[in-house]
Length: 367
Image (cartoon, rainbow, N blue to C red; front, side, top):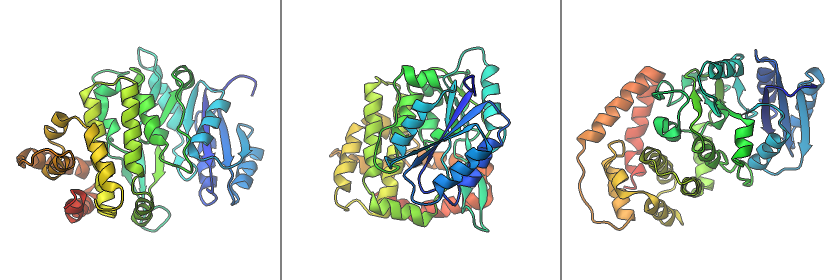
């Protein structure tokens, strides 16, 4: 290609042989044709490199970069350095995208009166992937993001910061990333490098556009794999939460809506840790105490979406006097959440979530 493409799609690959054909075929099938596809082999030991090379032989838009293993963050950074497009997207090699994704996103941005740095969409959750029980569900912020204007700043749609970072269901203006010096943290392995990247992108612009149409198909891990990961890395979620808090401080973010959303993420992460290994697992209590110390007391204790049990745990870990909290505001928030989930994902998934919540509530709150 002589002229730079409109979009560069970065595909960081490590050991993705079972899924890589589907991922690359979904990019090549995009209705937006003016793209380049940068496939980076991060030292895979399976047939991933061979699969990438086979696709590159059929589609000249694909470039293959073979390098030693450095981890997800470093590999994405290399891809962004190589990108020539006006926009940059990321596709993880065990996922796939629907054909109109990038064309629809860029066309939507062109309908707005102001320039845009980030175009964000919801995504599809692929539950029990590659099994007879596979299901396709809306993610947990679909239909919830309703800024008063487009484009907008993240404080106007802070709910985006409460959920899975889903950095791959967005496209980023390449010059915006370069002007702000936004890079991935280069942790070993995957390392949850998407967590700080989420903050450092969404919190450095007032030019976010949101199109409430899902295109990205995200293969969710099984509950067994998720449990095994948390048992092996019990402190990692809190470490990433702290690094995100550091990024908010460095960027001078004072918007209470953003910090409330970040608090919510913290309680979600802590709940998963407590369910898996408990508060008395080595290092957990100290890490949880450090996280709670970063939270603003008033924002925690007045947030109706935080359970009375979590609030009592907050007081315990921060050494503050115990007190009771009214249950009705939280019950109302649960009813709203249940009604949203019912409309968003259907009765079966809602029932499963209610059963899971009731079965793990005590563990999540450290009881």
